Image (cartoon, rainbow, N blue to C red; front, side, top):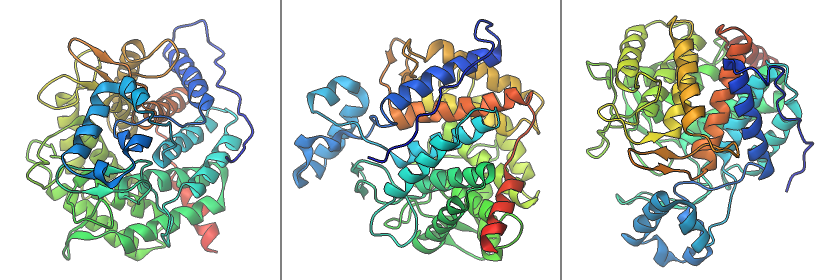
Amino acid sequence: MISRQSVPVIQNPMHKQQTASSCVGEALETLQTWMQSSDYAGYEPYDMLNSPYFKGRWARRQPLATLMIQSGKHFGMGLRRLFRVPASKNPKTIGLVMSAYCDLASCRQESESEARYLKLELQRLRSPHEQYFCWGYDWDYVALRGTKLTAFSPNCIATYFCANALLDMAAVFGDLEAVAMAKSAGQFLVQRLNRSVDTKEQICFSYSPNDHTRIYNNSGLAGALLARLADGGQQTEYLTLARRSMRYLADQQRPDGSWTYGAGRVQNWIDGFHTGYNLCALLEYRRATGDASFDPNIDCGYEFYKRSFFREDGAPKYFNDRVYPIDIHSCAQAILTFCAFCDRDPEAFASAQRTAHWTIQNMRSPEGYFFYQHHRLRTDRTPYMRWGQAWMFRALARLQAFLASEGGNRTYSAGVSAAVNAHSA
């Protein structure tokens, strides 16, 4: 285990006043303490195959593998205790928390030492036997449709969030090693991912090197990272690939502004947090490049997002056509999406605060962690680390940074550009 210096928890000077800032600050403080107490290790909705009882090949055969994974998703901690599923550390958790500490640095919180510890963890948890820096999840996964991913095998989504966090660290703390790691991750996207669609105008990056999936948010986020790596126009190839990936994402948007999850026959659902991913990918590309070509897609998609995924009290719906379940991941992504749109929508900052307030009031335990899902007649209180805690820590830290700057838009573009250019020199 890599050691690191302990970081003081967030102190809130307005502790006794239930203002928006103090409410968020108190939730951040208790969540940080809870996560640090386990060194960011925990459980996941899909981690049942980590059980010592399920190590054989027999446990990865269908339909048994899917039955065990889905049982773990629906029966929470009781089943994990029964089968002795160990807590483990997920690279995406580390990336999300690292980005959160970069935001907290803007609030004058001492967070650099913890961020540097997490960078070491990303180095340790990188996917093995890969030339470039890349990351996966800390559990074996077997899908009913035949997809198999071994623990820590690389995928695009985990790599995006880890590399994005490294760029945040480069911008905030001037860490050139973080730039080098992020640039290596960009090479993974370009060199190792398949191109499920590859035309002069469009490109769709696969989820992993072992498939040819056409998952819209996955490919869009890959393009957004390439655009951020090319910030300042230093990498023409990345800019071209980024624009082609945005063109593909934009062309898959439906007339009402929505996106299904993917192009497959069983991927035609519409949910809130993947819609948020798509919007943030387009917006990140826009801010990194200045290319306004996709503004109509951004505006149309954002209007669909606002009108389709929220109750009046700010509670986010999982799907566009029904309220339940209300999922903690949807809550976190809603806060992040609204923060991202603060410079385009004068109501976005209030919407972010409204959703945060509802989540803190309805999805938070007395111990400080956040519940998994709220259903019509019950609440699943399982404290999943990546799916819930890391995402909420990321979202609340971003909101706290906006509250500290009175809702002003904040981006890292200039800092990243300077760091990348310094490393290139």
